Length: 433
Image (cartoon, rainbow, N blue to C red; front, side, top):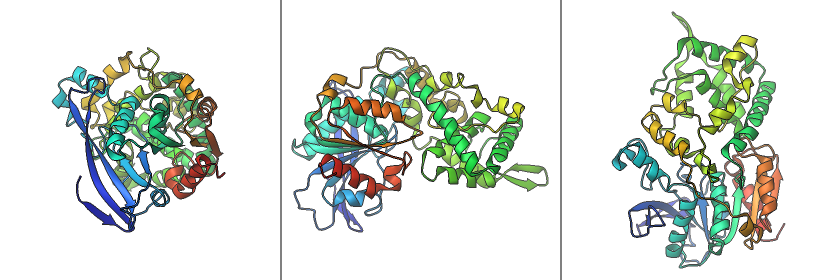
């Protein structure tokens, strides 16, 4: 264990764990998983129960806090917290365009990444729990995809859990990726229209950007090819509490007048590059659809295929008809691997994962129906990223699960209102509410 260090009100210890790449072959190759232990200052020696945090994604390391920011301060009142960098993310053994060629070609890379879904993450947790708690169960806090992992945890290793807290992350138990996106595109349209109702001038601004991009095919400063579809994917912002405002401020300064006429401003291009690039989290794009794969069917670039069923999202058609373009949300599509220089080297690998059919089931409805672990879930009433009806159907399957359905927050409720959200979920699992 490394030495501890301090931030205001918090003592932190960086911890590294060796786990099997394939838990089905424990004597084979091993990888490293990083986690940051956090405890309130002055309580380092207290016998506090553990709470392990599973970040949303897939493909993002655990949130990096400064002191007792956001929900962490509330958690540290009565827990010792472990912020887990899920395999391949953050300070764990990295998996990206720079490191994956060490595995070999695309086929070897795809076989390697097939071990990076929720099932492997939960097996990692169980291996780490034995070392960290001495075998005592802990509480898991799962945000978004972290909630998918928590649901898998309840399906396969409930004995490891004292409680499960889920925020914006109750998955469909049996739906294919196609079902996920058929439910998602109407939400994307609703969110776009709500944005235009709030900021009416943005409809004209967005159409102007689409027209300019279609004509000039700009390449952003970091090498990202900005297409009309890529511009539309800025709608991922609309799933967060302040996302509509951020999108508005982005659009209002999209153009600048130059001797050559109006062009996309440097500030706009830099901001768009920062939002659209997956250089810091490539696994989000590579693994995004396979987190839903479990019924023997390939995902086969589901979001892109299903999009064709919703012609209103055709930006060219919108321009021709004089209507404002619709923004898309959390949907990874194959063209992103052509546009994003951080993803281009992984295109064949992603294709192979999209073709794969040998995925194991992730959830056990019968076991969930017999659940005895206290579970509480925050369900956001029109969550852009995770379908509310899918979540509520799953909630009805998990025995004893208590839901808090709220329109106070968007998908990022744990970030935007962390202490309040976590306090509510803890109250529910403890029977205080």
